[in-house]
Image (cartoon, rainbow, N blue to C red):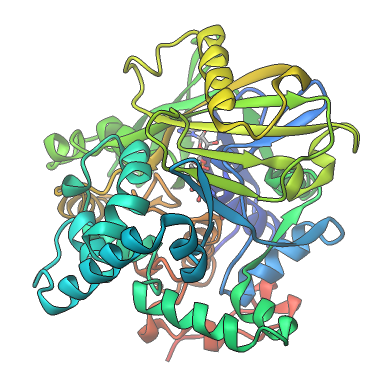
Length: 497
Ligand SMILES: Cc1cc2nc3c(=O)[nH]c(=O)nc-3n(C[C@H](O)[C@H](O)[C@H](O)COP(=O)(O)OP(=O)(O)OC[C@H]3O[C@@H](n4cnc5c(N)ncnc54)[C@H](O)[C@@H]3O)c2cc1C
């Protein structure tokens, strides 16, 4: 494609910045607008307060795609550290390793409760739910009712604010695929068997991931700098509020608004948009036929209360799931276990208590000082740190952290994507909320990579096929097509047969 065409990118999160990075590297001059006044990186940003840093939840850099790994290394060549994952569940005043370890579960739950769990699993295997529709059904089939009650129900309901009967089985299939009770038993037996050969166990049982020295924001700040060095523009504190398609001109007139509420129209040939599908669908003109449907898409919002501590890191876990109902936090991030540089010195550390809520519900409307009190109460119940060492708290709110997978979402997403692809030209929804998909960074980035390849090389990759395993649609044959060298990231054009 001729690189004089004007391309507007909405959002400077992983999806928007990936699109911008590749286009700018290929000689395109793009304009990126970002509503946040300070940080790039979107949900993958790293916020800073008094020299301490925190993610919006810990952000693992893990991808099955070699191409994404190469792109990460290319953007941030010197600043990755490799981490062994450690995470536990806090339940019934006990910590359980996660993924669950059979011996530990028996030991900590006791013989009677463990036997009940086992027979409940057997019952589920003999009488499975034929067509599992809900999260509850899916977990019942794979673990049995008792383990569901002990280890899945409470955390999941905290995250979604919905009963597990109202959460789609898709979510479980996507997030905990490959893990079931049989697998836990198998892994635990293997662990006993290979007890003497610890190295072998670690290789197979411990997940590893990469993490930038100063958190995920470091990656996206580096991408931003490279985009600007290549002559493109990123405007902060600017929000897209209306997308008008002029059919005669074949151009998009996008109204943007700055923090003083001044408005301006940008005329663009192409729009790559990572803003949430619901916001975008309601702001497209001529209006979508499925406007009433798009309004029904739901999101889950999120607050993290960061805790600044005047003491070395006390626990090794990267994060802890909280299944205890009395504790309001759903999970705790231990940022200094991800990277010691997340605190200003090795003598200090920081945690993040994560709360899942809906914007404007009672919890969201708590003042920052009330949230700090809630976090303090939770820490007292958890007893993982000496609260006398707390220096300060810092509250971070994240709207639309999770696109909700409820009964309607699939049909709505299909309607919206079909309508936008077929009835309007050159408007590409990308990324997590843009496509209303529970994407991690790598998936969000891949949707942009495919979009950009379609634009530059006139390819026909279907980004809606990027799935949760980052195994891109077989028929596109994308992963096989690419040479696994850094040069392949320059996208030497390949013609389609
Ligand atoms: C708690 C939590 C933990 C996570 N952990 C991981 C993890 O361990 N590993 C991992 O890979 N991923 C993780 N993720 C997912 C990861 O955060 C997302 O996949 C990624 O940030 C999505 O990138 P994106 O660019 O599609 O969207 P976003 O990150 O949402 O970025 C979109 C950007 O667009 C901007 N924007 C929105 N609307 C407008 C508008 N109208 N005008 C201008 N700008 C706009 C937003 O401000 C934002 O900066 C996690 C997510 C959460 C919530």
